[in-house]
Image 1 (cartoon, rainbow, N blue to C red):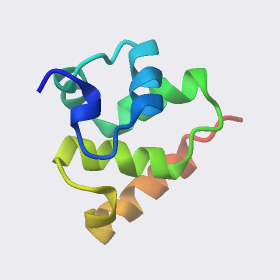
Image 2 (cartoon, rainbow, N blue to C red):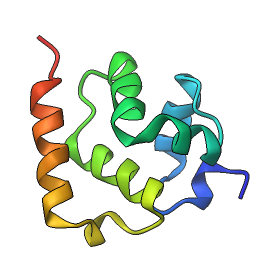
Image 3 (cartoon, one colour):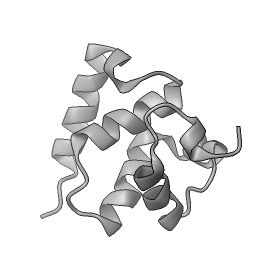
Length: 86
């Protein structure tokens, strides 16, 4: 798997944003993890939303974001809330 768009939840727009912040391959995303990838995207798009974070986590886990564990979704929401731009 060489393209980010081969991962679940990663469409062309998300792949473009990730590439802009230095995450160009699935391996790059796996190494960064969902939270760090989301923070990098937030630096270029302050309006990046919770659904992007869920999508990134789903991509890391190899599942659609709707299948994320509810407890993990709560963790991700708390992370986003704690890392909103001032």
